[in-house]
Amino acid sequence: MHHVTLIRGDGIGYEVTEAARRVIDASGVRIAWEICEAGAGQIEVCGKPLPDGTLDSVRRNRVALKGPVTTPIGTGFRSVNVELRKALDLYANLRPAKTLDGIPSRYQGVDLVVVRENTEDLYMGVEHPVGKDAAESIKIITRAGCERIARFAFDYALRHGRRRVTAVHKANIMKLTDGLFLQVVREVAAGYPQIAYDERIVDAMCMQLVQRPEDYDLLLCPNLYGDILSDLCAGLVGGLGVAPSANIGREAAVFEAIHGSAPEIAGQNIANPTALILSGVMMLRHLGEEAAAARIEQAVLGLLREGREVTADLGGTLSTDDFTCAVIDRLSMQTTSQ
Ligand code: NAD
Image (cartoon, rainbow, N blue to C red):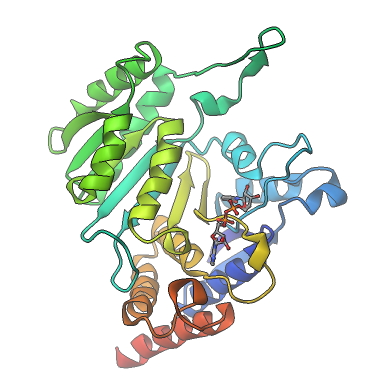
């Protein structure tokens, strides 16, 4: 039995987390879910959007599946996502981007993974005003931070049959910070002779990704470039509704869709739960449940490929519930045909 924290989030979070939970339970994997809350609504309940109880639950269970959370504007609270990554030191953000049969995209044959450093860089939010008319933001890059994300990327490449790691940087301009990143990544790369290694300057990388994304395999990025490139890569393969992700640290891992809380469609039973279900597939693999993960993936990809039983964002007519039931029906058909 696995113990997993289910953070329902807000907006469409309730609907898509419920869909993913039902599909995972239907796969036969035994999970004791600990249901927790996060989001703007929690400010009234406990004074902050990320309750201590939710954080404690993830610390205890070490694995969470998380729904999207609206970032409150003008409350002075940091985003729940940034807060979780920081509190749990979830230093590696993993975002696969693969063209899927049945999902409209301008490209074919894209099969990329973005590995993004999740804790350093301009994202540390060390900013201050300089006088009245200027402001400064400090970019922090450390040897330890670079080394652990580089090892994560090369180990991931080895375990998942990836052949090439491309480091993305701007060391021609930021010679000390991105320069240190490159220097450390090169040192780590030397210990993995079986994986090809190369480098791209971030602006050139953007152009090459829109011209020939199929040429790339695993992109290793500092935090800010990784944030931008991973959305670009989601766009290459058909967008937000189908893009999963994982935030991984030494003590815990949090799996979530890339998309946000889509408040304008919340509560209407029309959100596409695919991205969160596929995040659940990543979570099951992390838990060592490969067989169940493969079965769910096959069921979801089969439905997308046929294109008839899909949600409105993909041109179909199914509700969130109906799509969830269609995935569960496929799973039970697999079981009976075995
Ligand atoms: P969004 O991803 O919520 O929505 C962008 C567009 O995609 C909208 O048109 C929306 O309806 C659509 N969409 C998104 N997910 C969908 C789904 N599963 N099915 C069908 N359509 C879907 O992005 P946004 O509008 O920029 O952000 C809304 C809120 O979410 C903001 O407060 C933002 O800060 C937050 N956010 C949270 C996370 C997270 O929790 N990981 C990530 C991104 C944004």
